[in-house]
Length: 306
Image (cartoon, rainbow, N blue to C red; front, side, top):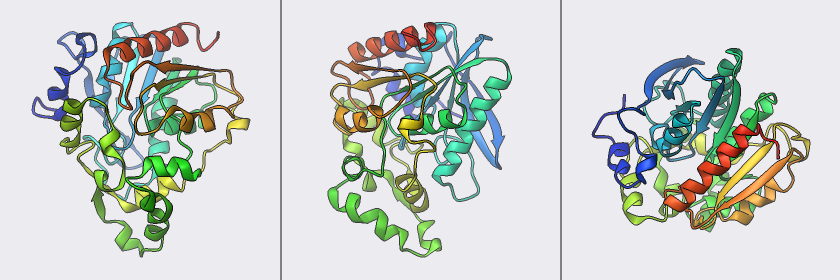
């Protein structure tokens, strides 16, 4: 379970006050067993008929999503932030692949829908494509909200995702040639991804990069291969529901807007794009956060209709 010594606590003072966890906005920590994995979740329960499930990306965890979860919970919604397999306090004995992320996201979403609740999926960074894949499984969710949509089949997307062009072009191919036991090895995330562009605030970046349950952790090579070689469960032209809102950071130094637009432009569902002014990839800037919160609340209140 998260403690006062974890990185999220240090991050709080660097966030706008409206986005900080307080005594009246603390999540309840729970575990759910999904496919043999013990998945840790932060839950902000309001006994509402609308639930928002938020997915982090590579180098994140559920507690770091509090900057968005807190204002949504204060607005009266149930909010769930899972630690995806390999991150945070989730416990997994097996070798994790990207398919496990989709299974976890789908199970949590399905459970909320089984309660008779309307569900909105939110994905940040690589969590955007994860939320998209979960929505492909659960097309009756009320809406899909993403900051980024990264189709790793596109070489330009790979170049921006990886630490350098060589890794983007040849790294995953070379790793795929390794024997299975070698692909189980773990490497620091910052060795294989462009973590220096995670956030534009240097003080926040320092906190995140030393977080051993997030950006400062290690990832097994099998997971990287499975994620980078993954294919969306539906091609965007086949994705006709639910409606989609993309709230893309305007100063994203990791994955520029045009990278996400490649996939977003092809989506057949009703969609809307909002560019967060001066927001970084991990958008902690107050102006960007206010803009993102307003766009998401409007989307939820109108149930994805414009």
